[in-house]
Amino acid sequence: MASVAELKEKHAAATASVNSLRERLRQRREMLLDTDVARYSKAQGRAPVSFQPTDLVCCRTLQGHSGKVYSLDWTPEKNWIVSASQDGRLIVWNALTSQKTHAIKLHCPWVMTCAFAPNGQSVACGGLDSACSIFNLNSQADRDGNMPVSRILTGHKGYVSSCQYVPDQETRLITSSGDQTCVLWDVTTGQRISIFGGEFPSGHTADVQSVSINSSNTNMFVSGSCDATVRLWDIRIASRAVRTYHGHEGDVNSVKFFPDGHRFGTGSEDGTCRLFDMRTGHQLQVYSREPDRNDNELPAVTSIAFSISGRLLFAGYSNGDCYVWDTLLAEVVLNLGNLQNSHDGRISCLGMSSDGSALCTGSWDKNLKIWAFSGHRKIV
Image (tube, rainbow, N blue to C red):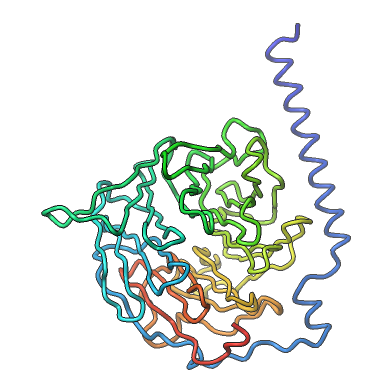
């Protein structure tokens, strides 16, 4: 029988062999991929998007939080926004009037994420309490104005970093966590349906920061992690990841599916956004900015979103910039951070309205801003 030392030696040799094969595979792929989306588009004569400062303007500033804004989400159909803040509150806003319809005081103030249910009648949130709390917006508040929790989803062994309802399913929710796993929940019963990662070898090896569900095929979702990878999962097969995507050199803070469901974008601590092909695993494009003049390091990408057409990629940065990228040509067409009424702090979250007519950004300056498109409707 082999000793523990011998087993460790064999394991180390096998790991080294796997890493060597992975590197050879990466080099081979790079040889075969002799172009990217931008070079191909330019070769085809595609013209860049021309954006003027007045084409995307800040039409509303939502003020009401007394702490940093960490997360936001739009309702799928109505013009409502929910935001989560360091002040320990969820606020539901009417995006058309800037009015607050709900201000929910949380039992645990350390909230990191929030999401609307598909029907817009419930909101979910999670944070350092390692739980995901569900609030029914039709519930009656108590004498102190506090809204009761309708369901608490417990089971994670680390903070809840993100949550998203499965599109068109009020009873299914996916969370990601600092315990290196993602979980599919039955909101009605509060039970875990499936756990992705953890004890399984194909799971993430560090905190999971973000998830995005494919609206074209809701059985598939991607997760971004501090292990610098993205993993594709099939909710019907929780025992292993379908595919792992490499390329980033830092934490993957944000993942978002491209509108067609065949590709997805990422934003990372390494200061870049990337576009991946879901099926082949190929990295199609890197969106990289120049370093700040006073610092050789690139600001981290905190959050990303695509326009309805996919032609534009919105990326929020830790230095307060919000770049609008032309996804085809990998060129910056506008920086919202340079416009009038821009944020005064780190952009922590952003999201597109369901009809594609507006972008909402949240910041450590305690505010949310709604940016409306005055032109470029066909491109957007």
